[in-house]
View 1: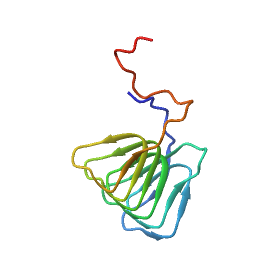
View 2: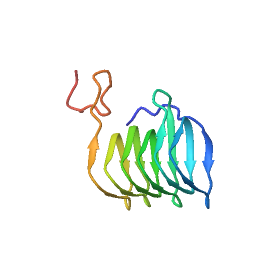
View 3: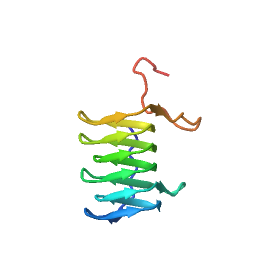
View 4: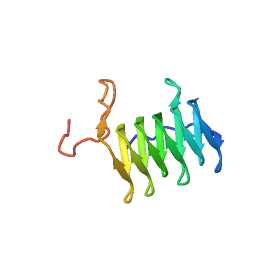
Length: 132
């Protein structure tokens, strides 16, 4: 359904039991199993993947290309390409996304808004009745 580009490898891990206070800027892939109090910002212009595991707690803003959440996020979320909300995802904040995949059990307390399609983007879906 969505054009699945090759995702960047996960090169960094914030392990369970680790607590970081402060903003984090990252590129490539990052997995969080611990706790972050601060903003998580992927470098723009480089592919990014952020995985927030079931045991993770993030308090702050998150911006990444491909974002997979299965833990708790307290703050706004921006997924520039794809947001995947796994069954145990809990998001308390506004969510902006280009494409969204939400599993049964995931919850969002906040507003959902789709990031507008840029003129160069191809539509994610084509209507069957549109034969042109």
